[in-house]
Image 1 (tube, one colour):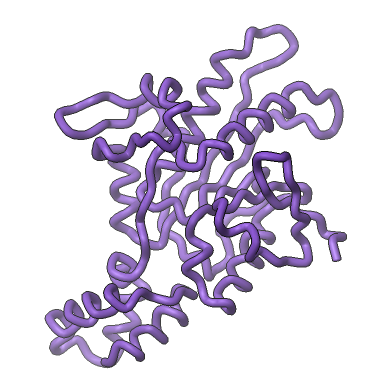
Image 2 (cartoon, rainbow, N blue to C red; image 1 turned 90 degrees about the vertical axis):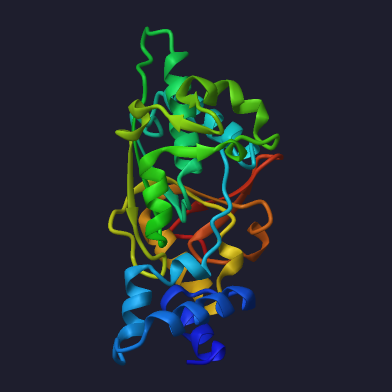
Length: 268
């Protein structure tokens, strides 16, 4: 099996253009492990997620690109203050390509903090659910454990560290996320090239993964993202990715600090 053939397989199964160095490591691993496995070995490796461990990027940390979390906080405020049909009482969020889970936990921490600041009266704490998935099973295992290295808290996002700290128990060289947050998030393995198992999300975070997809892969991923959003739902992409987003049902929006996309079935 050549690296070119493996690259084509990555495009077929994952929709991505794999890094050459990653392909070399993957090929070496295959040579050591495929003896006697038969012609279906490669498909098994891709479908099981083993290939994802070699070919996908898992860079993540808490409150990355903090402007998006300021945007989310503003969205929460607007949602409880609205007196009309726009008022949301049960928020449904998806963190797509979540890697090891920092983004999903950051979202949960922010909502919990927001709910803690509601002073009663006519406004009630928001109920919410978060679905969070990644194609790499090992990344999801880390997310489910809630255990992270000290590098998971960085200067980018430091303005939100006061929100994270109550939920992160410091150990010698790592952090353990509070167990109370784990029940708020449904972590699972899923391939973005396939339709989402759930629909009707108010917000989907899909950040810093789009850049790795081929043009054909991007088209399919965007179709799946749009299909999973409710009408009027919001898609948040990585800062460097927004210029590459083109879809006939997504309207580009700009708050001045954040670019995002809103689903509208009538956008041409």
